[in-house]
Length: 249
Image (cartoon, helix red, strand yellow):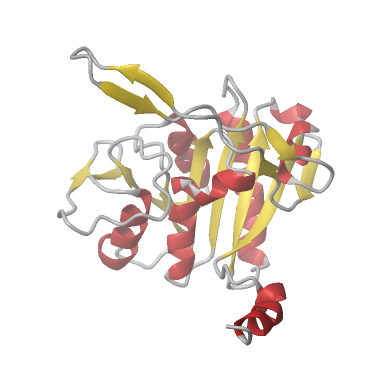
């Protein structure tokens, strides 16, 4: 039996992580370690100035007063009796496509698994009502089983986005690249009860690069999108141009 570590950024009680854990537990030994609260947008942040505390829940899950990255790091280095064979993050409540991947705690949890030498996958449910977590869970199992049997390159993370549709309405799977959004809307300025100014992030920008071949395009057409992400952020195609530029300094 394989050993799977499950985490997320929506919190240990989120419906997505429950659906994912239950689906994977049908064929694997699963340890679920996740934040004790919603940490959406936490990206790859680590808690460095405060101690981490765990809470063993009645359902067997473990909550942590830290970020998604904290959870995966702590689980692999301290909590797992047997090192996991793979790390799976999700099912996220909402898309992780295009530019959003840079901010995503869901992606970061998977990335931390990869940093620590393990295969990793992140999975998200894309829609407004978010009713069909079971659809995403079915595809998580399908993709995960294939990933175990046919491992991908060690420097990659699979980023999976599933349309919020009944299972029978999913058209299939497409391998995609990240799309892009327009710049985000401005900050929203309001006031607290004391009359002091407070600010909220504005809505995300509309899709800009969302054509054929992108994650946005595939999901909009009713397909599951799989995008391989790499941890190495080096812009290799710019190295020589930058070297030429440096010569002029």
